[in-house]
Image 1: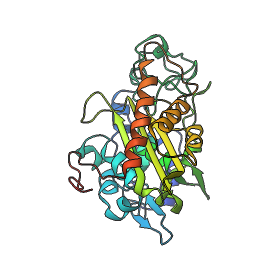
Image 2: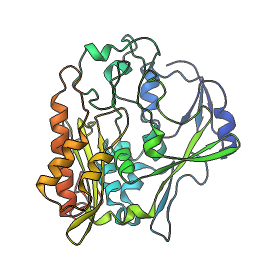
Image 3: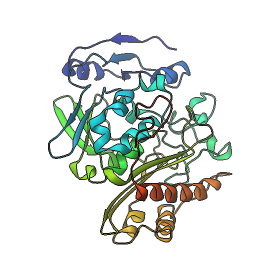
Length: 344
C-alpha cells in the first residue's frame, strides 16, 4: 500500500474541497477501496474520510410514497428499515443477498454504487487491463471468462458490475444525487454508469471532486411493492457475487400486467435494464409463455465471451424465475441475519 494523506472533514463543503486534490479518494466503510489499495490497484494520494459528515446517513420517506436515502446509510440499516422495506421490498431482498452480515454493517449505499468490478484481471497488477491501465489491453478476453459480461461488452473490456443493490435500484428508476464544487445535480441510475466501449476506465458520470450524497426512489416505484422479487444465482450461498441476478417488479391490474420492470446483474459492466423485455409484457397476463418471451427479449443481443455461453441461458432462466416469483407476490427474505426471517 502506498503512502497517502488522511483527512477527515466535518462538512460537505470541506469534503468537496479535499476531494479536489489530484488522486484523492472518498472513504466511508472501505469494504472495496481498502482491498484495492492493498492489491496496488488503487493508489490515492489522499483519503478523504466522509463517515463523519452530517446529514448523509438518514432515510427519509416522503408523503407521496417516494424515499430519499443518504449515501452514508449502512447496507444493514438499509435492509432493516421497516418503512423502506414496506414500500420497496425489492431493496431489502437485494441488499440482504449481498456480502456477509459483517460487511453489510460496514458498507454504505454510496460505496455500493461506486464499487469496482471483481474481475480477477483487474485485481492482478501483472495482467493487462484497460480498466486499470488504459491502453494496456484486456487479458480477460483470452483468459478465464466464466464471469465475463454477455451484454454490452467490448473488445476493450468484458468486466461485470458486482452490485446486487444497484440492480434493484435500476429496476425502480432510482436517481443519484451528486454534489460538487458549487453544484448539485441528479442523474438517473440507469444513465449514471457507462458501458466500456473503447474507454472502460470511465465507469460512471461522477466527475473528479464530486461526491454521491443520496439516492432518490420515485413514488411511482412504490406502486410495484406488491409484486417485486430479486433472484441471485451464485456459486455458494454466502458472500459470493452473482453469476447472474435479476430484479423483477410488476403492477397487476385486472389480471393483466399494467407495468413491468426488469433489471439484470452479473451480465454487463452496469446493472442492465431490460426495457425491451418490459415492453413485451405490457397489457398481457402473467403467464409462463409471456415470461419466456420477455426473457428472450432481455437477452437479445447477448454474446458469449470464451466459455461463458452458459450465462446467456442461465440469465433467461433467472429472468423467468424472477417474473414468476414477482407475479406470486413480494416476500421479505429469510436469509442469514435477516431481521425479516420468517415474515411474509
